[in-house]
Image 1 (cartoon, one colour):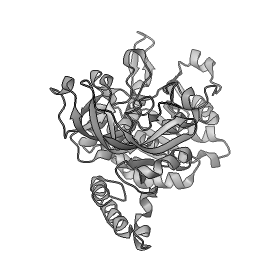
Image 2: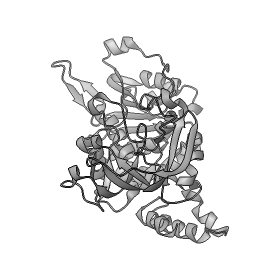
Image 3: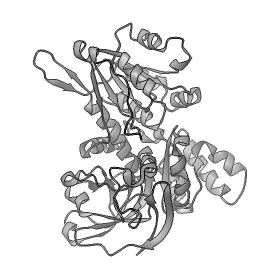
Image 4: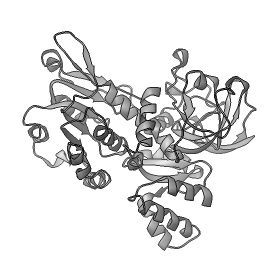
Length: 421
């Protein structure tokens, strides 16, 4: 069968093409993709090409389909999996396979499996590892967002503190502690705030920093301080760059104690070094942001690491359990992943969006491979409907649906888009 997909042939070489998918093998599954959210990791893949650790060497002759945060429905099931999967089922997929030591992953490594496509073939290792599982929610985009949100969950789960008496590590965020998310007024930061407000080990103080006041105002609109107070958390969105002494300004918020958990959400040297200085005794710094430069470095205080038991670590991605936890939190409405989304687009816009992704770091971009639509900001739906034009009616319906859901993307809007495009 034919499919349209965005394929990568090398560094900065993306092409929207139509081509023939082969018939599936007995140990494969054919899926139809309805939504895919774009990750900064795909931008890093594009600028590195075959130098990326997950990209194949023969990418120039056997291009890969990009996109790893995708969701949709199962279309056809190979004989090996017919007792576990059924055509018509909605699915969630976890791309971090690590199959027998291989770094191959959907959206990075496979010729016929990626999210920027109308259809894809799931290779046998995805099912063998249990990385394809049923999704019972109403909206495809929530299934897509469960993958990036699993990275947030994984980041928190990887944090740890120590007990000097028995050397056991207490995993996760310190309960009733001080937490700071540096460079956190972006989509992943929003997810991190939502998660901190939903879990049992809530912090006492949660500070989110950014140097862009507009982003901070948007963050406060999407995650109201009243919501945090109701959860017993003192949430603050701040711009420390305007302060004469950023370190002292932030330390004063903790009455000099420091922060028990520090998450660095932007690959900025100054942020990483500031985070290290903010650590309390037995504090943990998680360098969550992934730099594109393999030689990226920052200065860390190893004196404090030795004498004050500070911990410096990094995390990337999430595992199946992290993703299942994300799905459960979405289904129970304890977390609304839509706070992460700022734009939508169709398959035709993807080749232009990916190279320019750093420009849109304030929110996640949702793509719909079955749709043709330019990159469109959710906040612009109403103005576009009032401006007239060929799609004025569609944008009006999308604006109405989003306004009924607090200005956020939602399942109702998604159905409007899929039915009317």
